[in-house]
Image 1: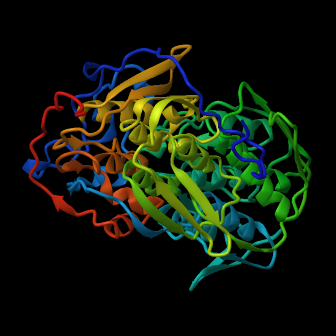
Image 2: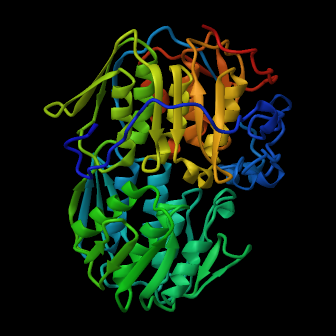
Image 3: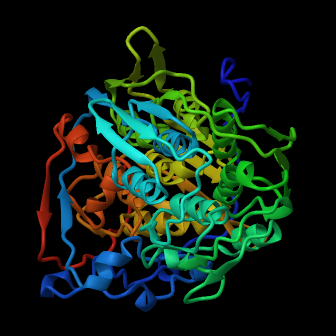
Length: 529
């Protein structure tokens, strides 16, 4: 069944009946010590990421702190108490796209002349990108409703400075690649979490193209010094099953190389929608770039970035939290700043909800989306492949907790390389709340989950974000239909991508309060209904 007949990429998200299977993720396999919520009642600082307990299988990439800077400073973090609600309806504004905003900032920085980015998203991670591009030599001015960027063009500066990526993998990876073409050394660094993330494939690929890059602390990890001896060109190889940001980073730097650049991708290519967004941004900026049909080969010719005006659209990852909340309660919800057409893989949340029985319609005249949720929705047995929409994996886990039947999600192995191992994190926290959820493995790798939902759950537990803002926002949504208030860590981190998150949910009557003194509860006995 073609669920998206007009979608530009032609990508199909199919949801079909499925059987059970997978390895059960029992609670005893999850970490008891979750440092972002531990010992807050004593006013003690959270431990460094190195002290996090082993979460079991796939533990080498799980349970890391996304807020390493604050943790290293020894700041005590608050918890957020969130009351459940009886209904969810109203009109809400979806934030603009973070990936589109970041790519537009990059093309504007590298172009000669003035570019404008309308309807840009202003959050911590786009601010990090702007500051990095300013360090690179661009002049970026914020106006009401748009950014104005005076780019560097072909005048590559001798900046000799440190570029701070904080927790943004995209900023670090793109800036590391771009620093290769500069005529002077540049240090690119980030916070504690970023220093734990996988960088070796990108660094090796850049070295294949002639870059001179050296890790400062841990081999093939952030921070790095790029000695600025130029990017010659040629052929490099990158894996397709770790991060699409590796490919994006090389694509942005490749036009500035001395010779054409060819990228060959090994293995299966995940998150292709993000690569398509990069290709679209580069093409619109005048870059000569081509890709094979299977997205495993790319050719970039030396070319010049051209200034342009760009209007960003809605962010479907952010929209997914509002859409999921709307799907948990019968009624009508309207989302504004929604245009309908998108290259974002996370657009899949719309046909997924439609297959779950929720009516979703777009109104292009008003740039809005209306959700009409009947009382008998979310019944049956469903399956979703998330290879091209990894950022909504936590949202789907929250939704699945209330599917009357089962929701099976596969193809999410890439999320183990995100700020937290997102499948394990959601399974661990939902299990604590009484949800029946299994982690599924494919060839020994955490790849998805199956959840069998219920009408409601007791609530009254303390849930960890695992230092990942998307885990927090998804658990926040799941808690809205429980019987009593839960407490959550990591609520401050919504500013990374959805700074108005609390304000939007407050429009629906969701009541929250920050709390300090916490005694961790045991997980409830089970679901209700």
